[in-house]
Amino acid sequence: AQSVTQPDIHITVSEGASLELRCNYSYGATPYLFWYVQSPGQGLQLLLKYFSGDTLVQGIKGFEAEFKRSQSSFNLRKPSVHWSDAAEYFCAVDLGGYNKLIFGAGTRLAVHP
Amino acid sequence: KAGVTQTPRYLIKTRGQQVTLSCSPISGHRSVSWYQQTPGQGLQFLFEYFSETQRNKGNFPGRFSGRQFSNSRSEMNVSTLELGDSALYLCASSTGQDFYEQYFGPGTRLTVT
Image 1 (cartoon, each protein chain N blue to C red):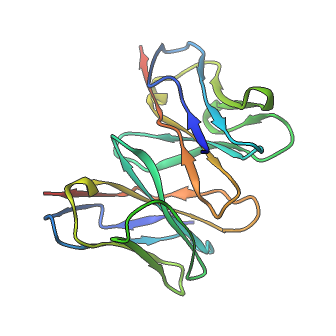
Image 2 (cartoon, rainbow over the protein chains, first blue to last red; image 1 turned 135 degrees about the vertical axis):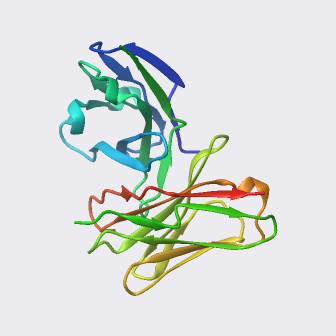
């Protein structure tokens, strides 16, 4: 069955440190890939997406992600984390079927001052 | 451009009752998807409507149903509520075509007592 794995449930980083959130998917073909962020009590905001082409994609708020086909991964990165980045991050795939997103379990990010 | 709106934002219902949630998509968007978010199961796809037609459905019991109106607004109904239906219900809208991105509303927090 298709699945999305985010191995890290919680991550804590210091403000100004770099960040990498991991995401692996299980699917035969390359799906559409997304990263969303959710602040407490809020809906989901799209950070970035990958459909095809350049495997390094840039998103909002200084985030980027790299698609690696050989590893079935789509890791999210940010070179310098800000306290306002504390939130929960979700990796998701769309298998090309009518806006049906399959989400990972999420990674909760805490930022220490 | 106004974002996705969901009403009501909070609801408290009793077991056995039914509930209707509403979602107004971004102007011009013809697709609306619904998701359930719970601490135990995470984010799960319920169904998607495009131009008043359900195109895809997740693995939820028949107590969960939806519809879409000609103005693209969508409603989701849950009948015979169970305690396990307590969740944040998110809707997302998109154009529904080509490389579609989904934009999420703030959600409706349903508590079943």
